Image (cartoon, rainbow, N blue to C red; front, top):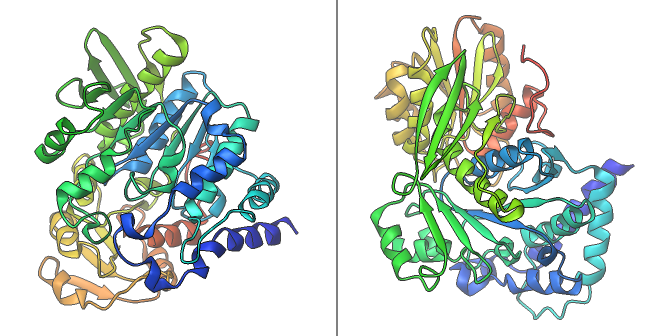
Length: 452
């Protein structure tokens, strides 16, 4: 019964969006999106977000991993932490978590009813819609408030200025590397994209922690109205990190002025050590604000899992899944392979739709790869019109293609050599397919037991 109600609720969340013709949703976000309706709903519900300490995460790469790492650090430091991420991989309820655990179906349905009672009376003009992610952000705010969380982390979508989630009041901002992406939605220029994302620094924000950025990001920040009043700390300029091995664990040590922080992370997360460093500094800012002391962090995150991000889902044979869609992501996977003593024969199973950097991924991974298998996702909205087989053969001799992802995975499992390595790399929808077929638990970001 509750499963049916959850499904009906998910359909309702997309109703407003679906009522507007697709043609009216095309164009730059500034012309077609109306995030002010998210703020309107929050206000109508008593502005629950303004009673809490929130942090927003934006950027082009690694938003989810930064958000999850920061949530894990703050939870390990003793806080009750709300986490809002998007999209989900297997279960829609993954998008809302407290202390790493996904929301239960009953609470999800109840929150939706509360929001719907307000949304139904919104004076929405014809041709406008209330964004699904905005509805979810309002639901998350109500849940976090009722659950008395100490701090909440909200992952934004592709932008910030016209992003519904940015309407949630937040005291701090985390900014991941910003690339020249989504030019058709945030552009038309890279500078426009940067300005859109830097709008995460609202008038309520007192601090921002940033990953390393291109020169254009630093230049656009100096033109930002908030640049003189907001504390901006950037990796490589204001704080540094180093990685070392200690008693079989990977240690990330961060130096921030006179303070030093450290976190123990798993081998699979170690290629994202820079993300962990940024998350440590951001977490220290939160703790400074909430506890009023300059605390040095020493955190054990070895049981933290980043769902679908450098995630080991089987030990023998070694199977890893990652949302690798361009060369930058692929370099992280390559570094992980370099760190393995004997990965055996490496098979890469790729699912890269037309809008992803297939050549960049293949070229980066090929030196480590014995075989490539090309497949597709079950997401019917993705387009796979390119002939990637010929492209793959430029880099690897052994290439085959099969559109049926479930058949490909079954075939890999049947023929797997326990000493080999299998990499499932591609778009997030494909990552979700892999986790579903392998029956990987995604409702918690904490791994409680060993993987087979």
